[in-house]
Length: 187
Image (cartoon, rainbow, N blue to C red; front, side, top):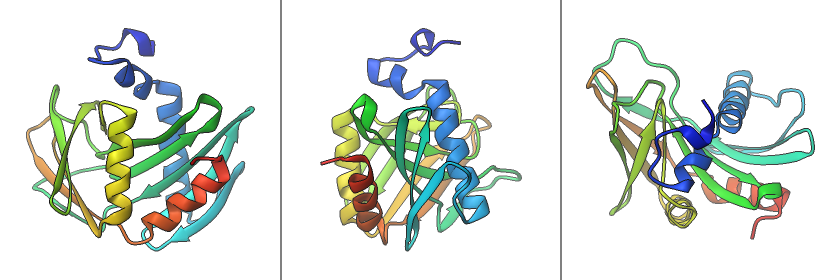
């Protein structure tokens, strides 16, 4: 199904759901984290405490991203894939700080995800196993709080009704973001 035919409330959603980029980003992050080293075509910019910073190219398109796994996950589930948080820069498309949360399961249809960093709370929309903010401005806000925070919680509900809470250590986030900002020319 083409991205422009998916049921989305905003253009931002349609862009976020572009299957090719989402699949590339998720696949690259999974490869990197599973292998502990950069795969072919990837350059590991560094491991910054809880976060990996990576750059790669697909054809002539450069992609830089930060990836992190939860330090702890709570929920009554029998089986679950790997949860992760990714923040990506696509300088060729002038897209920066694109936040994607991967649950490791299919979210409940039409549900939302709550992200908490300190006393700040954000609501993200879901589609399949991923969640996003509604706008680039919201991405910038959440990423700013991630850089200044200590712990981030992500609360979601699976398609089977199971609530999960993932806890992310934000140590090293500022340094990791600095590495991809430099590599992809973000300001």
